[in-house]
Amino acid sequence: HVLPPSLDEADAGELADTGLLLPISWQRLNHDPKLSNEDLKPSIVVLVDAVQLATQQDKLVQALVVIKNRFPSALLWTPGLGGPDNAAVLTWFGVDLFDLARSRQCHSANVLLTESGPRELVEASNESSEMGNQIFHWECAINEIKSRLANGTLRTLVERQSLNSPKLVEHLRYHDKLCRNNKNLGISHVQKGTIL
Image (cartoon, rainbow, N blue to C red; front, side):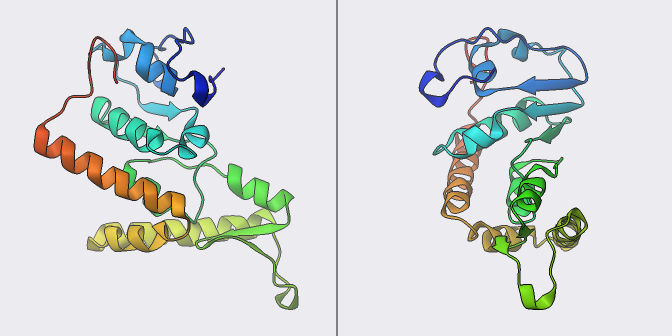
């Protein structure tokens, strides 16, 4: 029940759950005063319209920053958005949980989702788009992220991975600008009883 971007100012009437799993949409961030309740402490926050927000100029990054600032101890999940080609960037933005939705789409399209993005299979090498191969590329990407986190070089990987798509570059630049401005100005995202 996510409203299209043209109606993002409209109140969809979504109310926050109070359980351990908290689904949040862009509209809920803008219109649900219950999200400002200090007693709300979810274990997992799900940005349910992450895929739609990723196509827009700044809304995905804005939503992720707000959610991580408001619920710093909660794990963050952006269903259908992650892949081996953007997991490092999303991790940098604060995303903690990933799913195989894009890998399953690539499997059904007979394409392989790698750290460089989706690509056609190389027939001469007997490659396959089966889920085992899709998961292998996920494992490689996650191991790379873990290694970079351990040695403090995740940002280098993030910058390299952002070059996989112009939209990732745009998101990374906006994230850097937003975080820099918020740090310098001490801006609070909680206004008028709502998050944004």
